[in-house]
Amino acid sequence: MLGGAKKSFSTDKIVLEKNISTINELISHLMQIKPEDTLEFDTKNLLIAVNGVDSSALQGYDTKLSGNDEISIIPIIHGGSSRRIQFSVAQSNVEIFDILFDKRFHRDFLDELRNKHKYLIIQAINPQFLLSVQHAKKILAISLHAKKTKTMLSRKIETDILLRFAATTQISAAIKVVGRKMNMDYLIIAMGKKSSLNRLYFELKPFLNPKPLSRNNHPFLKKQFNVSKNQLSVVQSKDSLEDIIVEKATVLV
Image (cartoon, rainbow, N blue to C red):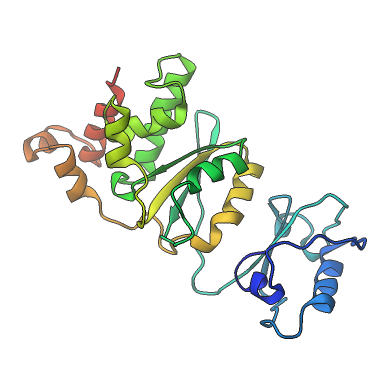
């Protein structure tokens, strides 16, 4: 349970010993066992996932449940929801999470997230280093191709992705400039099966930026990569800065 649901029951996890056959029965049961001195449990505005799959994509509140199902319950706060940024690259499912800083994101948070979601490739980057979704697609395509052809800049594709965004072969330099910064917002880029991405989404949803990828990073990246007006004028494309930066990532060996 997350957000208001967690506060309503004074816990983030409930193990049910009673047999529950549908989500409707689950909601009724939770209303019966909710402590009286906690916040009201709004049953009409809930996002409920069964094993990482949104119940609205199943049979809604009539969705059948079995004994080993993991149910995630998240209150819906109207007016503040964030759209999901999902796409595919080289037959790989990808999602970008624009994360707002929270004091719970300690130094080892990323490692813990990777251990919890072992079937996903997860990397965190400084949000200033992404121009657009298209920029991310191009960088990830380079890293995935490098993995396929065994030409990655590092043993791990997570590190290769970081190096490509930084346009450097030096891991320490990439971590310093593009890596996640403590006490700051950051982006998480995850690749894997949709069901695994759904589980990660439900965990990160309370911390998502309601206006994802809305920063104008062109001035910063133009300065960061020493791109001149003359260089930009030579490249005839919709986003010449993006193409120049991607080219820098492509030629790394």
